[in-house]
Image 1: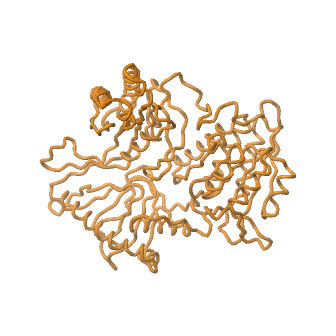
Image 2: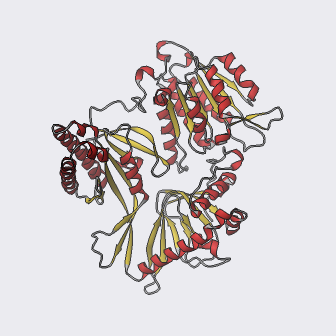
Length: 568
């Protein structure tokens, strides 16, 4: 039997639904499975490294969607009886998909967890067919899956025939991207821009070679892969050298034309499991690397606040595994990567004078980042909770108890007043705000994305409050309220509207369960009670979420901190 860990990660999704978006048939099927997981939290399993999920030759019809983690696919070679690894599956991949295409059959491959933990959504063939029934767009996924299964089978036969070898390795990949280079070509003669690019790429190849990495020119950027002993340290050392090389070259070429001041460089470094495919007789040395980490590194490298930025970003794995004392790794940041449609946890490599790990970031300056508690001003916090009887039950009582305990143990506890309102109805909102005059408003309950937040009616069942109504409400109390926390699913939609009137708003980009909601609130308020500013408290709340991974808990969607200054 599977080692089952029930998670409440999707428990706060209204009615267990997730908004569908357009995409390929397989993408639509994956979204339908995500909806299924929201309605059926017991379908989510967290498995540890080495767990054998599927055994070749056994009967089975379950289908799995990987939420996070890596699974290796093994097939028995009939000639020598040995198992060979033929592929690696990543976040978002379907595994066991052939079960949808047959009523009953034996598994044609074995599947094993190779990451430390992996979170999977498990569905029976009947569950899948129920999702497909009546939905033409999702039903087309059957054809796409049939084609996918055929392609995977062809790859398996190549491996078994000795034409292709597949190996899984943990490596670091570095992607460099020159910002604004195409616009530079419009401002300076082509000869100058091309000469600059040639010189930088040449220097970059030398730097990567000195670090024993494999270099690949990619136009106005490059890719480098590091494996073997201390590959993380070598990758980051190269990133720092590339940072300095670019800054020096930019300064030199700016003497020819000021337009060179306007270009920048982004470097993204990711460390992860990667699948290395090598084909017999191929001219490509070392084989071809396949991993979603390459796409993540490329997307991180393209991130910039302004085009002239020169920054090095490390993913969470790289930042955690870096042991060298030579570098200062900043606190975690939350970065939305449009190219791959996901939110990523990153560290910024500090290559100037090291700063405090809790220095405010996200463009929020100290002078405007609210927390007057050190100066003796009292803080009023209003905790609002709604848990309608027709929705999944959530532990708002435990959440507020943890917050209350953290504040009671804090340094400035005598200056903090925590007011609680439970079973909140729509008509209770303005009265509670008038009575308590809070600087911080915290809402705990259910969210429904674009539909709004869920409050209670006289009968205890759900009554919606729209984003427009919430925005109008907070506009009237904007003079007193400094921060709003919407600790509920898909509430970043409301946060992005409320921020027009309130200095700071924290919302959730995706679903959030009890464990995550409680952990974030615990970290946030213990920082507030210690006199930290909003950005500091936000990051400490996020740290509590990251610590859940060490306990085998599933990854959680990232809270988003918005500031009024950023929205102007």
